[in-house]
Image (cartoon, rainbow, N blue to C red; front, top):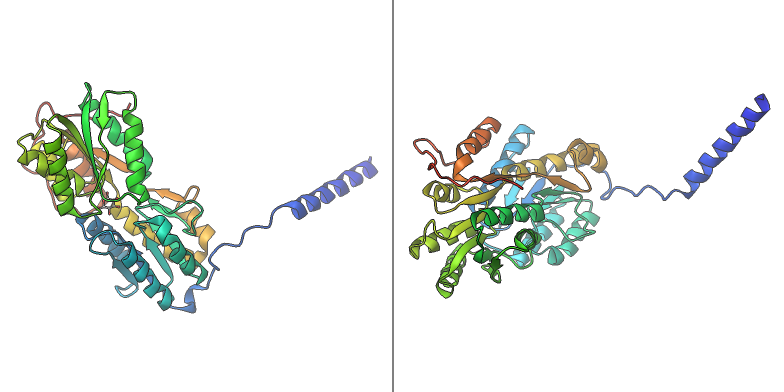
Length: 359
Ligand code: BGC
């Protein structure tokens, strides 16, 4: 009996060795784990355009720097004036040359940015993405932001509930390359499939609010029967709202958009925007700084695990806001200590306010 067990044990040990020998080598975490004390930490966050949405990201970046005891020189936030792939590449190059600790970027064109992101990773810089996902197989160690396809589906569901009879819907967006714009559009189109809603070809303003307004005006005048409008980027909702008001069709053309900047909230209070899918951009900025610091201190895997990344993604989530739940949303922000410039004080939702229900 003893002999039997000895044989079994040897076989098990042998099997273990064989499995270990056949197992693929554990991939080396990229970039190399460098000791935190090698250089003072420097983290760079690169956004996409000058806009209150990005100011909220910056607030998150600054709040993280403060909470984590980093100075203003150690945490840089930068955005181009408007969508500008060349400027994003140029800025990355500058910080690669400086040998910073980490760069978090929202790539306006993930294909165009990937080579520079790779160069940064090869130089030992922790590269992450926020707001706008990278290409598949990217060197980006984590994407921190909205699940844009699902969020687009939610926007489409809201439009379906607002337009039960269907009708023509215009789509305004700021990019034909950034994955967040493409995925939101795809999700929206998926949600309205099989309904009587007809989506017009999206118009692209290249993250320029003035162009967005012009385009919204022309879509409205070219389609006198327009029933709804979908604003994909933060300024698209207000662009539609302004154009709809100018056309004297406030409340009549249903507007669903993204984000919760002050102008959008004011249009919701006014009854011109019917629903918005609010992203949590403050958290995107905050977590981007937090994770790069953790990577530098504890290594990539430990940082990803500690921050709850799943398959290289930290989904920051969304909130659907309508006039019916605006006050609750404000209370939620206040409870989390997230700053906002608007208030619902002295305002009450109308009796018949649209209430969104996720099916
Ligand atoms: C998007 C950003 C964009 C911003 C302002 C947001 O909805 O997530 O990528 O830069 O709008 O245009």
